[in-house]
View (tube, rainbow, N blue to C red):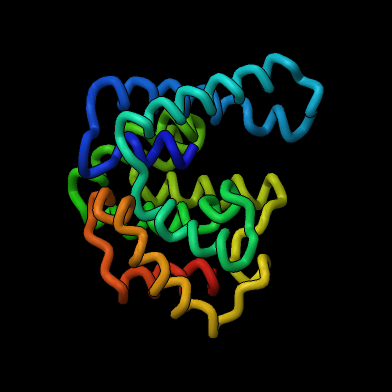
Amino acid sequence: MVHAIEAYTSKFQKNMLSDTLAREALKLLSQNIRRVVEDGNDRDARMSMLLGSLLAGMAFTNSPCAAVHALAYPIGSHFHVPHGLSNSLMLPHVLRFNREHAAAAEMYKELTPLVFPTLSAVQGTDVNVMADGFYQLALDLQIPTRLPEVGIQSKDLHLLATQAMKVDRLMPNNPREVKFEDALELYSQAYNC
């Protein structure tokens, strides 16, 4: 899902093809993730997850990933946290950070009903609805939501921020510029939430 969201909101190379792929990926993934977790033998849901993953991969091949991935890489490389989990840990915080960027906020409003249709029907399409939805999804799927749950201590946050700022292949693609202090604050939020 992060691949699709970041492809859809990337500052550079965003295009009609990446947008179409990202939207379709998000529909498939969001409609089937709970089904797959609840019943690993649900072949239709698994097939939809595989297709959604493929489409998301094609989306970010055409429009690159951004700050969520840049912040996730040091978590994975230094603490051996799986890629998907490290992205999940950072996603809600980056979504909220990017809401200050008007164009990103509008794009998130377009995606929120695709990912969380029931939630957005009740609470609206503000980026906070999406961020809260992903945080709750992680809780529901019983995966970690805080950095301490994967062995990261407060003393490690400076190292993570330093390393994330070196991911210059991805960080500039974020809709809102991320400075070192921002990266450190995003890690602090993921640590304390």
